Image 1: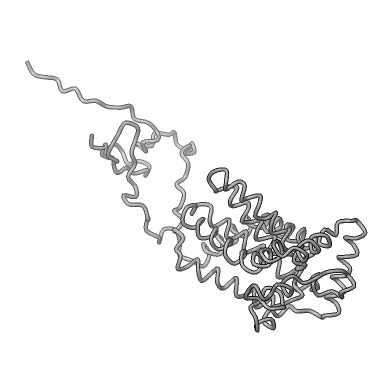
Image 2: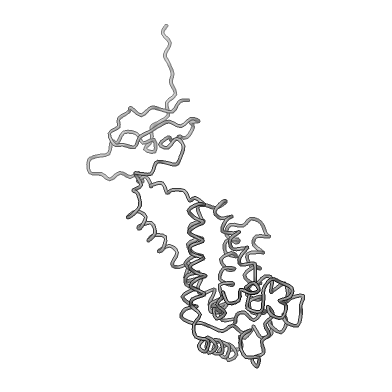
Length: 322
């Protein structure tokens, strides 16, 4: 007797991209394929970050402002804080200047950590969380540029440069023999003229530390990451006030700048995408970066089959090899 071949067939589903049997004029319920975004490359990211940082540093240096105006702004901030009894920098500065065990580590932290922790987290996001990296990088850059606007519009004398009658002591100068910095903020000895000492408002030390804390909280693993996410920005705020480099309201300004930068991140990314689409190559010019692009594996299959979503393709689409 002839043997009847039993071939296992699974029911055809719309997700298999089979032939289009919809009535004429009915919209296709299947989602449109999304264009593939080109992967981020370190050799394009690094120059971008360097250019933004150099522009920020150069702009910060050029936006020195008038010394008289800067001192007036600093005194005005201090009087406002004293009026509302939020001049927390006064007791902190006395504590740090009277206690070398606190003041010296605080000076080291102020002079170095924002140059180390921020890039380290940025690199880790690039390597471990590439899907989140672009938004995080854009947020940081926009906030940094907003800080530069603040330095330009409101040059502010830090507490350590006010008249001694205001009761502040410059711990960076007091403990300068323990570190590489001189008596001019955190600049290395002999390079004090290359820094803007009237760029107190807002405090980007606090702003960048807050960014680091958010990244650690969202993407860090374990309890230590959560503790560091809270401890690092908090400690940074205490350090900038205790070393008399910033007022309390400078720290508040740093938080406000980061909040504004966060609100502008999505619009900025959409604008960048439009510019790229307008002046860059079309998505059709970019070959797929996925090996075996166009191959799909359905439930129960182990080897993907090449399928097409073109309407009217008929049943010529080969099934996956079993």
